Amino acid sequence: MRGRRVLAKLPAATALFALAANPAFAATSGNLIVGGDGEAGTCTTDWSAVTTVPGWTVTQGNPSVACYSIGSFSTPAGATPGRAFIADGPYGDSALRQVVDVSSAAAAIDGGGVSFNLSGWLGGYGAYNGQAVLTASFLDAAGKPLGNPAQLSGVNASARGSQSGFLARATTGAVPAGTRSIAVLLQFTDTSASYNIGYADNLSLTLSTPVNAPSLRPPSSNVPAFDHVFVIMMENTDYAQVIGDTTNAPYINSLANQGVLLVNHSGVYHPSDENYLAIAGGDTFVKGAIYYPNIHVTASSIADEIEAKGKTWKAYEQGMGTPCNTSNNNDSYYEPDDAPFINFSNIASDPTRCAAHLVDTNQLSADLQSAATTPNFAWIAADDYYDGEASGNGSATSLKTQDGWLKQTLQPIFNSPAWTTQRSLVVLTWDESASSSGNHIATVLLGSQGLVRAGKTSNASYNHYSIGRTIEAALGLGALTANDQYGQPINDAFVATSGTGAASLSTTMPSISKGQFIAFAFDTPFAQVSAKNWIGIYPQGGSPGHGSSTSWQYTPAASGTATFDTSGLAPGNYTAWYCNNDGYTVIAGPVSFTVH
Image (cartoon, rainbow, N blue to C red; front, top):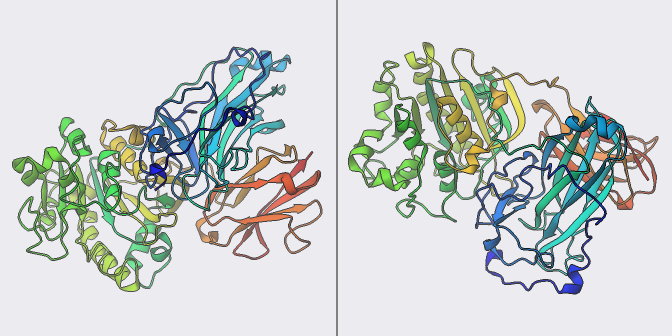
């Protein structure tokens, strides 16, 4: 385990390799990067866990905030690390973005002479070449790039002496006239060899003129108020197993076509129960394959927030029998923790409270008879056979089993007074993928009274903390941890986005220096998503099917950030193209850029 290794600090000579900030630079703006040190996050001491990174929007992968106590890391000479740093997370390359508004300094910037300083600690793990890349792109009022981006990179294994730790990097330059915002992109690249092997901390962007300083705030929410929220979590099924299989899962796919399908939704842990806890408590709390009765969470849960607001809740579990029953005498596949609340000590240790809220799914039909008896929040759990696990982990048999149970369970909700006369939301999700790679799972939102967009897909990056944040917004609840407080609410399930529905490819870096990393943002409609979609770079005049690409990579997600190292490109003009399914069918592009 990485967290158990003790690694020596880098020698002083190696530390001197770090680039120091220009001593003549006079910064008067303060740090314009929000959350560049990870200190506001709930840091984890579990390399397998995903946490929310406050202040940033995730555009690729599942980055996390890690505690320094997770291992031993060298830091720049004379510097004292804080509590936490940002890492690439457990599922490979990742990217985060924020846009800094500098329009308050427009007059000074347009007058010339305003400088910037971009700095940070970049690092990685041991002999792995995973590294962080920090880029600042200067944008005009229309969001178009100006001049060359500023970039920090190069802290690979060789630069670190194959040690785990950080080196300081900094660069300065002139802010182009006309700049009104600065797009800051933090990428973790070359991380496929392992997990959590690229690190960043103490990221800073300052200008030599006063700028209205941004502050850390939770992402804005467009989630409407709901009277009832129903959560159903199935198990152990890959996104690709269920979505599109209309033979074995026709009902599930019909739901995806009726509501909003989250195309880029991931679990926050592998294996199972930590994902349940992430929604119910805003944290994974435990490590590894820990299950009831060995989980004892003393923190508050969403149930406490619901009761504090004077609202009602119940967890309905197939096979429970009598309320708060924890034995499986009635159903050999019944597991008490298929609804997470039995893991919270203030519920498990209170028999009266437990019996009032944890009941068998047989009770659901009676409670649905009127809106008044339908709880404001309901967690509905199949037993381990019908939730897809014991029936085959996303196999054809498993999908048929899940599909039948969901149809039998959800149709009464859709026919109930709570649905037909009040504002109700259904969130159908899975705990984890059948395979651990990527932990990509399906999630569907459906709503009554026209509150959820119908027949849409979302390409935004979400995870189980986003579900928790959305439930809190829907019921007017407070946050439990930084994970749900700063988690991205699933806004585009409720509000139309500005997208055209067409595939797109873009960059904020049309002019770069040789050796810099160039990043492309890509997005494609659900119908064009393929594990073998790819982006290729061609010399000017070349294109897919006409000449060879100088560099290319697969982009299996519906949207994200693709990063290319330009050290192998000769100075000149290039175009990037986004192509479908291992072929030369262009779905977006060309995007032109120049290497100097």
